[in-house]
Length: 372
Image (cartoon, rainbow, N blue to C red; front, side):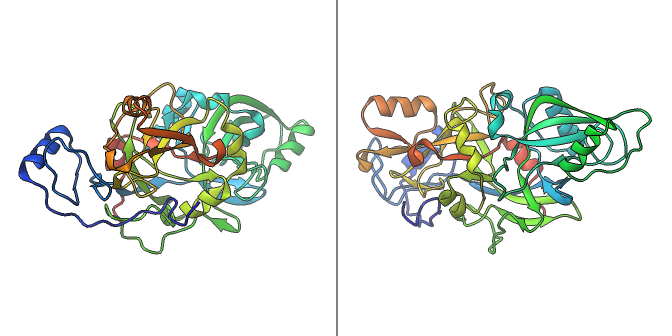
């Protein structure tokens, strides 16, 4: 893999004839520029540029605090397999948490654990009691952003106190002070800052349509005001609707490092399951604002679809003849070009490239656009 993997590029725009510009604007609300003026009906050539307007937008996402092995850990809540939990989290945080039923099919071996208290010490936890306890942090072999939710309930007559580790919870359960109930609910809670580490922060915090995809996804982490500022990238859902997504973690380690996100080996276990939904990125053709320097990618689900998941299995689309490349906006476009023999589709990194990219609609992004 070359050094340009997941690195954006800057391109100079050149004039385009008024008639073609009018036709393009009528066909799409997106900003399109071309390096070469071309007669109407001709195909785009290598060197053509297709950039989405508002391709990268900084957004503020609420932080949630928990404990991990006795230490504070800060994470974001983006998705839940249970609709009621997603709605409650949305109301609690003031930020849209997606309902992602596919997460319930995550293999247990690919999950970390979260413990939420239903009574006991009052606090800012999801049920109004102490903050949750998580079982792992990035860098641990058993870390996953996908957490199986366990509820913890103190028994009547027990001496309650704040617990800060899984070991303390297990010890209290063993001595009969509390009960632990495995709910089967899975949530996506990517860690942002933890004991001894945090997600990589960009040095250049100016974000615009020409910003590179890497080398980091975070602009600021504020644990006092409890928010993180991340870069939201624009792409397409399966029907051509605009979506935005953030990137929090990935596997294998190499692309995770180049995007500036946490490396999570457990994500590989999702590649052969329904939990990892297809996301198509382009490796050549029309230059643009996609993660590899070409046109923006296309996901197989919108955030409101039943088959939506924040976990995406990446495939690479490659034009056999880049001079015949044109802009693709939907899954049907991809299928049509593949059937016509114009593109090849290859599972990225031997089918092991899984990225945690929660999707959001434009309304959510604009509502939480960073003011800093």
